[in-house]
Length: 181
Image (tube, rainbow, N blue to C red):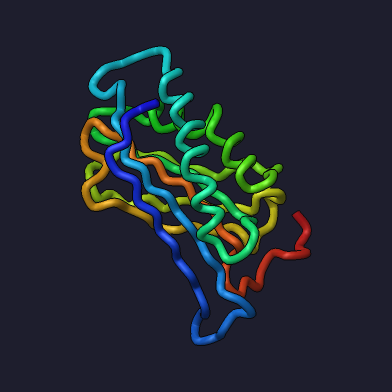
């Protein structure tokens, strides 16, 4: 497991849009995890350490994210900001091969791909973390994003990993449902 320097949990609860109240608040929960990048500053062909770390990070934080929601999780997303001494592939190694399995286990399923975003940046770089319905990739009311950042991460030799869950889609969404694909 890679070294964790910092773990921050964010809980956002939304009640209304443009002055119109929704039937119930939608909660989005995000874990931001600043980890050491074991491959910073050098090219390494085998990224297995990061692949395994992605699964371990999801296993560690997903149960906490589920508890932060008011209802069952219906949307999810994942992302990473790689510090400037790393490369995009480091973030993708964390997110794609193995992170999904423990995340899906924590939420009781998830047939759809988990939307993701990876970028390189210095400390405080914002990430527009995409969210999508866990079972229906075409549920347009669940196409969403939450912008996240951590003031002192990622440092040059770190990766900031973000994992998000939500118990609803966009507030008061009015497009897409029932529309032909």
